[in-house]
Image (cartoon, rainbow, N blue to C red; front, side):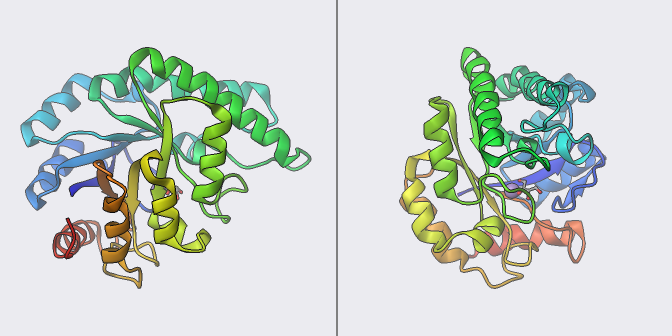
Length: 270
Ligand code: LER
Ligand code: MN
């Protein structure tokens, strides 16, 4: 198991990130706790000093398997499914702007909250058309750089679009791009999936990234999810990717990050 932690490069409103700001210090701590990698939550790539980031990552021997893009929705309300064409265009341009950095870091680009929510007065069908077209445009550019994308099903309280692994697989089929896979998140799965393990197995090779949080969105081990069984199902699909901790900084960020890795390393799996 390659263990990863979500880390915001800058301060952000999104709560389920254990660590934010003070990038070099955070990378040092994360490596010290034994993590292999960091998933970087980046609002916009042009606010990142990439050369410095690469030096800091190399100093701690950490890789970046994925870039999270949801802050563009959380902080700026950019959305693939807005009824305003300038907002849709800005969202697509923002996601495309992550591609050179993702290529440089060999990271997958996550498409989660940037899909937005269906605006009042717009049909869900219209949102799905916008979403499909946006993903087709971004994946086509990504393919030129060898960059992959991960579509993340989210629970019903965050969006009306794509709740389950099955919803995600259908959209991936509709987009028709080889470089688009699935990111499954145990927090959302616990709310939306009829059976978490069955959905993981059914998603199989389409899973390209994986988020862990417990039922209460605290670190694994703090709630009632059966992680031995869930991660056992994930590994049974042949998944070779990273298991990325995305949880609330509770009881505090450092304790949550340490408890997560201690708990996952203590499980009787692969
Ligand atoms: C992002 O990975 C995520 O899981 C969402 O819940 C963000 O709100
Ligand atoms: Mn997630």
